[in-house]
Length: 428
Image 1 (cartoon, rainbow, N blue to C red):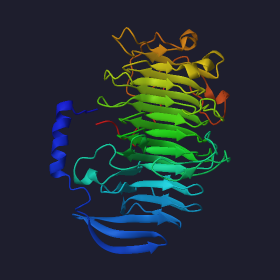
Image 2 (image 1 turned 90 degrees about the vertical axis):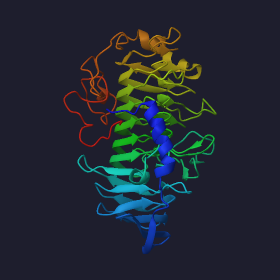
Image 3 (image 1 turned 90 degrees about the horizontal axis):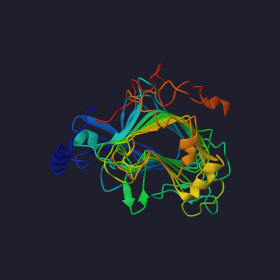
Image 4 (image 1 turned 60 degrees about the vertical axis):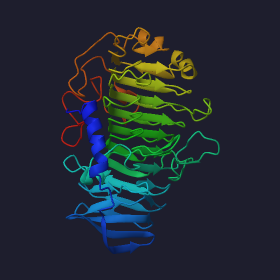
């Protein structure tokens, strides 16, 4: 993978102000359609034509792959409405004084079903006009009716992107399959940041498979409570955490990949129950199997493989965690109480080569039970080939639930079947 050196990146950043035409060069031609509160406007950028969405989607709508689509500002999909997106479709986010994002409201659905050869791509218009940057737009937000552990049982999403929370563990917000989200995660203010993909109180009937968050400014994937499951998901080069959960997320995850960019990134996994009330119910208590987390040693003390804190519980199997500046796995005191009774556990995992040269840090912190578990291979230092897993003493997660795929390897990618091939966009 080709990476820009720090000096080269600085030169490019200085050039942006000269060559960035953003959306000021978009020429509005005509209103093509008006569907309820939604306008579809034909706009041009040079020789390219876009169908620009403005307003709220209040009737079922399909975005076809034969058109270039553009999001201007926040686009909301109302309750009872389905937005469908065809394989191979490209959706661009405008870069102007507004913040572009796509938010599915409670009771609405997003059916974004790409294929391995024709993924659906959400990106920034600056990919066509200049040099795209993390945080160019807001990302995708799914709001559901599954339980969250905040007072009152519901809360407004970051950036006023919709209410979420409820009592329906089986709630269905749609399908994300073979979808790539680039350069999202716009920061709106202090402690008010959008992520590449926000899963807010999303229920387990929602399908999240083969989804990538690439070069976001904040988190790649954040689970705000809910019961949604997610597999074959990838978080690369994101500015904060690759994966984040809080507010009582209790879903399943399998085949997760995270890789940090050399110049940014804090935790591969940041896990909380509830930062304001560590005893809030329902507890965050997910089950993860087959994850590969690869850090970038940048001397940042926040650069941790897995940070388990604020009362989270959870169960992690078949993980590879390596190359983080600080600990591979770090458990705070509020969650350490769950390590001894195994309501928080890491098993059949390889954690190695973290904080090399730093005598004050180790592969793990505050979790001797993980080190002493004979299933873990903390002293093993395998040679990794990309994201390919290691044929070693793995755990079969299908013994927990049939949702999980039986495996015979540790890590995210089957050595005999690279599910990231063909569709995945990598660090560059």
